Image (cartoon, rainbow, N blue to C red; front, side, top):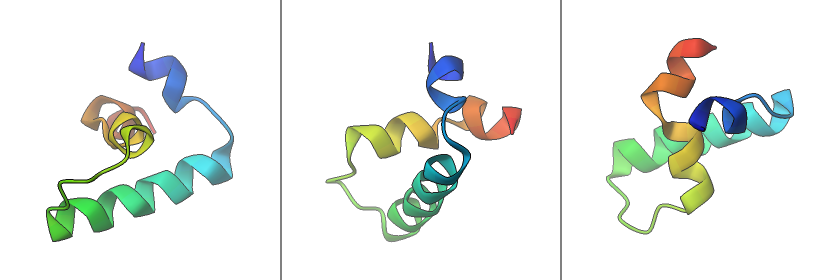
Amino acid sequence: MAKSTCVYINHEYIAHIKMCKIALQNLVRNCLMTVFIYCNPLCIGNH
């Protein structure tokens, strides 16, 4: 399921990855659901 969500518009994907990295580094608890989806290690591993 996460795989299909990952394969999306390239530039939105990259933007979410950046947000994800920032959220992880700052340990933000209010991370958006979309960020969590794109933040999936399986997704990142596939790209």
